[in-house]
Every structure is written in structure tokens, then in C-alpha cells.
Amino acid sequence: MMKTLLSVPLYLLLLDGVSSTSVLLTATATPQYFTSPNYPSNYPSNVDDTIRIISSRPDWKVAIEFTDFRLESSSSCTYDKLKIYDGEPIYSSLEGTHCGYNEPDHLFSSSNKASMVFKTDSSGQYKGFRFKYFASEDYPFEDDSVLRSTLILYICLGVFIPIGAILFLIFIVFLCYHAGKSKRTRVADMRIGQQNMRAQMINAHHVQGGHHVIPVHTISGPSAPMQQQPPMYAPPPYDTMDYSTSGVPPPFNYLDPDSSHDKNQRLFSF
Image 1: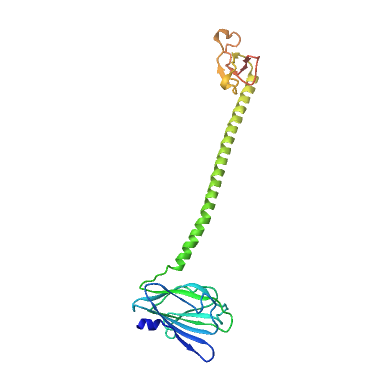
Image 2: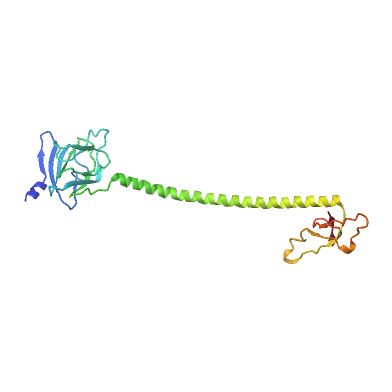
């Protein structure tokens, strides 16, 4: 019977036209909801309401969570405002004065009581507010800072991981391209070096003179791109050697694929 009486609003009509209402709410473990007058329609003018919330268990505290909030906005909440207290309005600290469209933060009272004071002026009516209240032994809300940090972390991961993957692929392609380019450069340098060495050997052969002929066979079939055998050294036939003049054996002959003595034979000597 006492709970029923405490939950019924008490209305006081003042002579100056301001409607003053005192409401006492009992918070239990089951969440309940409370709204401003006429919600979701606009609240009336000249309202002065006091809302007191007490926990059904003395050792439990009051938890309040706003789900909607629309008041007249002003820089210092001069016109319409909602004041939230951690306890009774007179004997407890003011948690904050709120107006505009920003929902107040969650409130978890330090005792088994919490209260609010809702005041409006004669103009500028809005939708008002709606909040959920219940009693709890432990803090029931997740830390907003943790939620914001987690959200920021997820956003950063969602943005930077794809960008990092793309940059990594570009880096791999860059390395592969330059590795292939370096290999091609080394092969080209080796070929140039071989060509220079062969040219030097050919020039030396021309200077020293002397000839010894070795037949060269043209390569056909799958090895067609390599039309000739590589340069090779061969000793002269001993049955043709003539030591009568100098007493020194003739030099070995060098076969060069780029110079031809006739169609089938090419000759240069050291």
C-alpha cells in the first residue's frame, strides 16, 4: 500500500500559473521508464517538476539511462532545463544541468536515492525526455570511454589494414621488378664482357698470324638459334708441322665463329 502511494504524483497548482509536480518513483531490479509531460508531444510551458527515485532495497543504488532528450537549447540552459542530483535535490550534489539535444550521461547514484528537477519557461516547447531507471547492486553500464576507444580502434583497423595491405603488395611488386631488372642487367653485362673478350682474342690472332684450319659444322634443328659451335682450341696436326725454319712448333689455332675463311671453315691463329 505504501509503494502505491509513493508512486502516485502529487500536484500543486501555484497562483503564478506555474505547474509544480512532485513525483516519487520506486526503482526495482526490473527496468522501468519515465517521460516528461505529454511525451512524445511537446511539453507544456511553465513546468516545475521534481522527480525523486528511491531504490526498493536500501543497499542497492539507482541507475538512470536516458533514451531520448529534446529540450530548448541555450548557451547556459537559461530557458528550459533538467537538473540531475545524486540524491535529494537539497542535500546532494548536482550532477549536471542539461538542455538542447545532448542526452545526459548515465547516472549510478552513490546511495539508494537520485532526483531530477525539470523546469520550462513560457515559450519554446519541445518533445521532452524519456529515461530508464532501475536498482542495481553493481555498476550496470559499460564504460563510455572504453566503448569509444573500442570504436575508434575498430575504425582504425578497418581503414588502415586495407591500406597497409595495398602498400605491401605495391612494395612486393616493386622488389620483384627491380630484382628482375638487376638480373637482366647482369646477364647483359656478362654478354658484353664475353663479346669484348672474344674481340680481344680475335685481334690478337690477327696480329700474331699463322693459320690452322679446323672444320666447323653448322648446327640445325632445335639448336638453330645457336648457329655455330663456340670458340675452341685445337693443336695442329703433327704430320704437317715444319720445324726446319724456326725449330719451334707452330702455335695452336683458334676457331672464331664470327670470321670465316671460306663457307665451311674459319681460321685464326695465336
